[in-house]
Length: 198
Image (cartoon, rainbow, N blue to C red; front, side):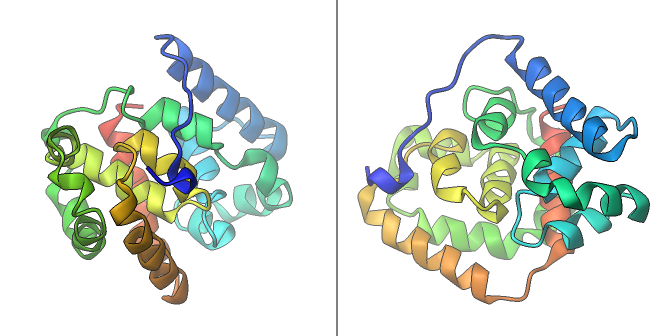
């Protein structure tokens, strides 16, 4: 395993997901002076962890909320540990019926690119079993859009094999060179939130 993709150590406390959601919602309330639901606060926190936070957040939240929150982007943004607590391998992601196939259809190209980049890792039985779950694939795609993808990935799927590390870096560079697709990012965010039943 390449050290760039080292796994985080996460608590297995069953209440950690609710605690994490509460913390995210509190930060959103503090920054916006408005009550946001768990899902709205999570959308804002995840949008603010992407490379185009305001553009991403503006698609799903009101302009006034985004305008108020943008001065607190770093404060609101979901942390690596929070993402892994909510969507990592230890988190319960529902079966494929909870992620609409239209969401995955929108993300097909990115999923295919990830499959190619992770081809050695996905040859391993445990990773291949996880990858078969639509919700897990969407969680991996969502992590790819976040700024700290390299620290998150080993905890959302499994640590990538060294032979895949360079392909993952190349894929991330390619995505950074493309125009930012806020619609696709929001589809991924909504799909993973749905899959986690948050």
